[in-house]
Length: 201
Image (cartoon, rainbow, N blue to C red):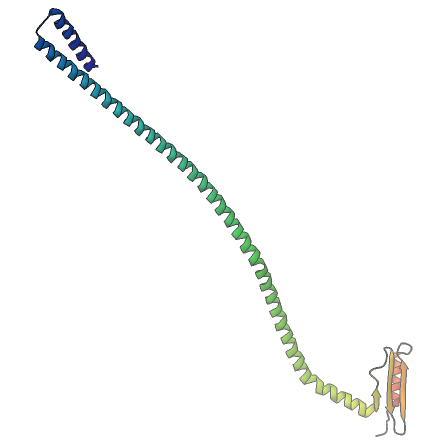
């Protein structure tokens, strides 16, 4: 604005000088002065416009950078939420897989423990049977042999159920034994079998 006032003052002075018919030298000085003022004004205007353009460009770049930063921050927030959700899903899936893998293992472990207990029980029973066998089998064999020597009866162990069959080897002849246990009392069968035993030694 000051430059415009200077120019106006110079112009008015020039007009007044021209109107007063002053010296030519003073007119030239005023014209040079006018030209210098105009040049300064134009330079100042060009510089101001350039600075204004630079400021506007800088403001635009700053605004665009700010928008980009906000968009990146928003996008980053969205991606972070997606990653957190995926991580949560992966953790749940991992826990489910661990549980599904661990359950059969626990079941198999329990079954294995049960099998070990059964195996130990069977081994214990086998030892008991072996111990019982070593003690009772000679006695049973002895009793069976003694009974056969005394009664002289050879039993048919393959006969049908409900039947008592065998052969009594008496002093003179062998006599077959054929009894139906379902139709005879146990006392009768016992008395009959003892009657076959020879009382003479």
